[in-house]
Image 1: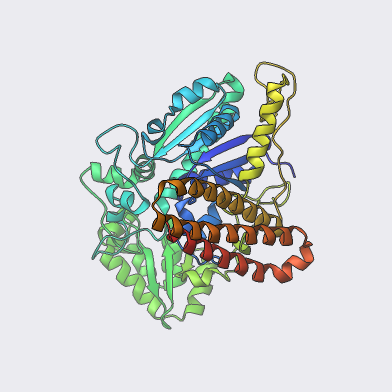
Image 2: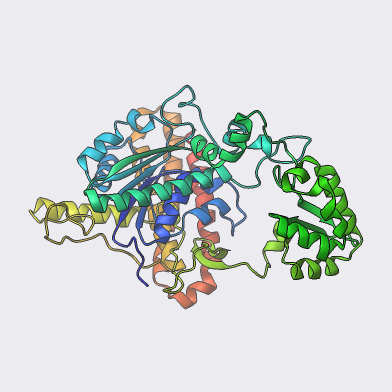
Amino acid sequence: MQKPLEGLLVVALEQAVAAPFCTMRLADAGARVIKLERPEGDFGRGYDDVAMGQSSYFVWLNRGKESVVVNLRAQEDRSLFEALVAKADVFVHNLKPGALERIGYNIDALCRENRRLIACSISGYGETGPMAQRKAYDLLVQAESGLASITGGPSEAARVGFSIVDIATGAVAVQAVLEALYGRTVTGKGTHIRLSMFDTIVEWMAVPFLHAAQGRPPKRIGLAHPSIAPYGVFRSEDGKPILISIQNEREWVALCERVLGDAALLSDQRFCSNVARVQNREATDARVAAGFAALASSELVERLTQADIAFAFVNEIADIVGHPQLHTIPIATPGGVLDVPAPAPIWAEGERRYGSVPALGAHSHSVRQEIAAKGRRREAGQNSRIMGKTVGTETPSEPLSQEEPMTLKQTFAEYLKSQTDVWRAQIKDYEAQLGNTGAETRARYEKAVAEMQARAEEARKLLEQVKSTNEVAWKDMQGATRKAFADLQKGWADALSRFQ
């Protein structure tokens, strides 16, 4: 099935969660996403190791992308970045305000040079104002925005149980980028979108904000609702916690008559409307709790279902892994195939295919070769572009290849190739330093370089072995191969430590 964003090029200078969430959604929709990473990688790669030895955050947020390692202080990599952005449809970054300018890039200037470019800058607190330069992470913004003050129980503020600010910001960024892409079909021009984590979550908190603005800030009440009653957790006779929600008077009548069996509640003025029940929350909850405590959970579920009252069990996360409503998708990663929660939209055209998670620098070589080839053809006078959309002419141009998702063997081979190339470049750098050292230091450095050369040669041989292996045999040998390369990486790190 063809995806709606196929043919679009997205360049991402991103890390952590917010921007990667945005570009993941664009990749899911068919865009080609080239993720530019520091030599040490997106620090989201190191958040944990629970997903087959990999970060759960990175595995979830980076499927379908190509990873290219860059150092934007090196001229060769600056040229690569400039070539990519000059031809991109979308550029997304979540660096601290001013970070790009400090290395010589201005987003508005990039947009002037590529008038169809849609740039999206994600920050913590915006690009102006007294907090613009403050570092911002999800929990910090939860606290600063007041979100934590309305989360948790009465005793103390709490963190929302996942990175809601980051994810909300990424979702708003996707919406804004898609809006800009549609706008470009009308105007032919791109734009620069700026959004912050703080603005995003405060806008989502408009209801508690309006309460506070009127002098009635909501209080923390745990698993209950500040403006609806009854709406909370009540325990059955056998101790099962069940959360119910009464949204209107019809449902209140059904709860009293068909679940609690207490029609007398309907004539009690303390409970005659939602406003009255909220004002008398303690009495309301006590009457509902007494009714629930008199019934077994199985009986309550049957009555609630028959009365069409909204209810839910208070599950643990472990319960969700086997939940009957759960949908998952398989995602290929350098560590193996993982099942992750599926994106919510279900398309009439059928199930979508999702790309693999890239190893660090897995596409460095191929993208560099691709750009270099385009440059050579351009110098030869050929009118070619990175993307297959030529502005101001009807002459078609050659697009960057839209690759099929790589197999696990191909992914690991690309990773090995990338790491071997990086090691060789580092060896050259250290060899160049040998002449500037004293005899004792030089001897230590020469030994270290020799060890590094040995590790690089072993990695080259391992790469050849992987390339010559078919997919069937790879399934049997991948564990031993990965361990062998892990041992090489440890040996490399040990050799590198001699230069400290």
